[in-house]
Length: 379
Image 1 (cartoon, rainbow, N blue to C red):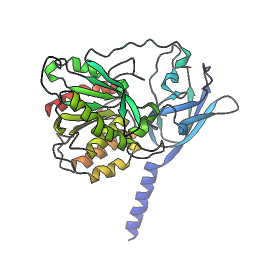
Image 2: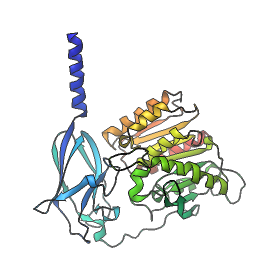
Image 3: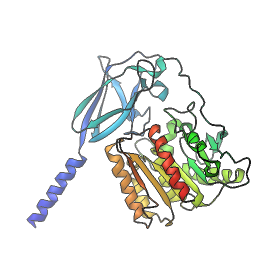
Image 4: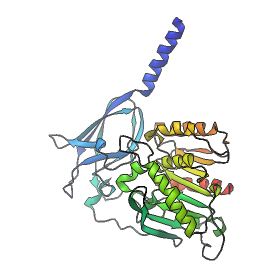
């Protein structure tokens, strides 16, 4: 009995050490001049879904003119940038060019000093070029989303032989449409999906539908559960995909409508909502591309996954980088383990950990060809 009690105490002590939070003070040592009257400073990173204006992550000015924020965080690795509330006012280098994400490793109480070189809006508009290929079209700049009471731009990539053939094609539905095809509309880099597809023979291409994210609505629309960042509207967003957008696409384009040939894919919050969509509607989405999923923001997704029944032929492609955060690989593997208990084979749940890869479009651009090759092999 004493031995059991001692073991229990030891386990509690170990768990306390593993999950203990540490206090992190973020402070600026120098703040470049502001071009506008907007002087609020925020942190946007993997700890808040990369929201550029999350009020919980706003630094407060002190009497010396510096800005400061104190947060309790679990030990681990984090990536982030400093913004003034938008990606157009994000920090940059002294030439006005984008900088890499800041990376920190937190193991004990510490102070992080933020030296900000300059702000993006202190420079003239960066000349962006349209890079979308001729196979990319905009279906509608203001596509109605009745389930959300909003409108959104929707893109479509059509295979090179679409106009000259009568055949039907598989479809991939993807989130964050601004960042899929065109550098001009991307906030922080594009996936280059169209360039990847254009390199394939026309016979191997498919239809890809991209739905723009809703800016400040992104976190709520891509989360089926309420969180510290607001009420989750992910259920409504998925209902829009299933009951409004997919019927429109199937009616107006030559698609293979069955679940086997219908895929949903996205990264970060897009990976989270893609996972939920397949779990809820496996008879609609037979395949899921789960890139760097933000499961940490919606832990209830694990319980939901355990409760759902999935056809044995349902397929998931899981991929992330090992330099994204300490929790990313473990969180993703936890979901993989749950899915595999439902009789879905390892062949249908490949799990890729990319060494050194970080949480950005460059990684997902590199991940997409292997994902698409795996996806096509099941068609």
